[in-house]
Image (cartoon, rainbow, N blue to C red; front, side):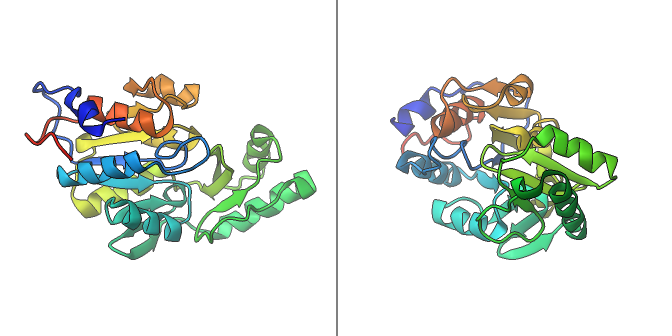
Length: 250
């Protein structure tokens, strides 16, 4: 895929929408392919966007350490929203937004109900999130946690079940990062594919669902890409981002 050609086909006319300053994007199955690999073209595209003066902010259920490292290697912004919004990092400074004490209660309650089906995934360390293998019925788990008045969110990221404190999601984490960066939510485009992106999509006006997104995400997105995975990211951003430079080459 030629990145320059894709960008040239983007909408160039003036609109009344606020100028785009930042792109908040999911990582797994949004910036990657179906095997969670990063394609060279998406790295070029992210760096092209950065050269245009746009912030590209990773917003994911992954741990803060790996997310911040990935942002640096991709050439994305030094601001990340990790662990489904429970942890943020700006310029290397980490802030935990949720109360992790409730996570232990949630884990014990789920183990009481589902026994050995509840297994913590072998992922990188988390500061304020449980990462559980997708071995038990998530809807039933939600009912159990609700009945026990345990204030957590449990969502399916398509990679694992992610459990975070009730007051933490991708939107709350995004709000804090935007406040730090002095960016209005109306100046943001959000891109995603799965259930944990829904709180963000409900609060950002310009949203993109990649072609492989679940139907609940597509239903509330402003633009649904025909292409899946990272190609859908390039397609959607190229359609929605406003022309902010006369340059047309990487």
